[in-house]
Length: 238
Image 1 (tube, rainbow, N blue to C red):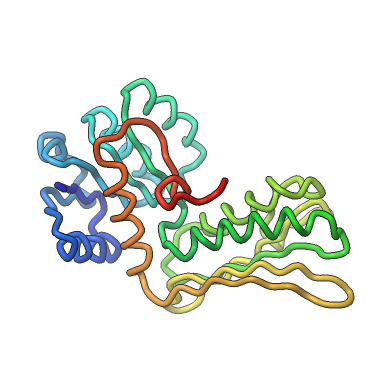
Image 2: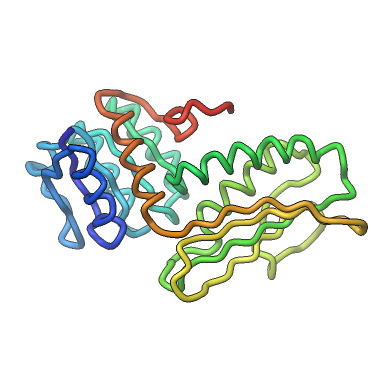
């Protein structure tokens, strides 16, 4: 498989190492200088981890170049529906995930299952906490938002998520976002009552889990059209 890397920071380099180890070829690398379409079109698939302000244009460039794209950039989802429309218009292919870690995607599925179960027990109120390195641009993390939306989709008692400091009422799910040193990513979900607490937690130890998941997603997406998710890649229940 021939791969273009869009965004060549720490994550891009981790992805490159895994691609090479799995026998793939990196045929183009794009950083802050932008995308060269001729170079991009040499690839079977692109993997994009850039900045929120650049993500939509990078995704658009891939659709127009007829190169499937796997993107893990967060903080641009105000244009997600626009990207879906463009993907359809250009007959493109895309997988977006707030987190490509295999463990985190299993955690997403576990979160949804637990949320559905807990709807019957309103005495337990959900709270989320995420901890990331101090260089992370967005807060809360895309992963925390995905987890919160997973709860909202299964528990009708709650209407939206909100940063903990901005909570207005009991129908909002609080997310506490902590920025600390070089933490790759820790996410926990607690259901708290006056009697006891229930908690599930995922702790990342390095970027390698995210990078491996992105490569596996690219392997899945090659040759396809349409919009997919990591649930499709891992054949997880919806």
